[in-house]
Length: 353
Image (cartoon, rainbow, N blue to C red; front, side, top):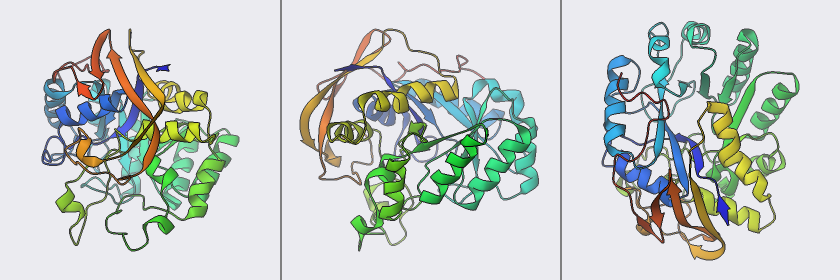
């Protein structure tokens, strides 16, 4: 089957500052192997992407290393609400962290949140890491300022129901769900909780089921690809996050094969809606070829991500990427990356700041 090149609106390339976990070359190779031809990268790197200087650093690194097309988020901080609009044209959106996760960007100040909502350009999306009550406060801000927001990695029944109610009442809100929140629940990982440390946490089976039951409310499937080394994940204090770029499409194709969703819904949530929400231009002469009948077993050691492990280790899936063509060039075929670092284009169309 031929599908459009997919878009992942939530990834962490770990460069600069964490190249032992991932870099732009390895991370975008993983994306292509997963049928993803555009990624959007989050700002919680080291240093975080929060001003003109750090955005310039991040753009130069991405330009050298990216094998697929890409866009960068800027990070909302306590004191940068006035500066960011001046460089917004070089970013795909603003990321606000309202709950604790990996990195230093948690935004505690209500005044800072208000300033970002006032100042960030209205035609650029605000993407928010918000859990539980912070989703409600984000909905309130979206209503107050009458501007669109996007909620990342929804994981709980109460959260998806809040978002559903907000949509029904005219709030300009979209949301994403990760494959790990769709396919793994706490019951599945009993005794292995440290290994499955992630933000938001793996939830109850009732929460997982509620996500499937409200699939029409979910706008996008996004990986939140957040690699760490096997040594880090097996330590006494493992950082939160999973690799996901190479397993997202196979897992969702398996769901299609199992009758849990239709292929048109998969395309809508992994291509059409992500591109619409973030204003991502169509890639010319781009497509992926998948074998929807191919059954195989997920093995981290066979992946392109530096993480070399997966929370879905040993899972049997049905559906595999065979070939990827990006802008007329064959970039992946039968398990091999065929394009060099630097082939990817910045979708903001401005490489220098």
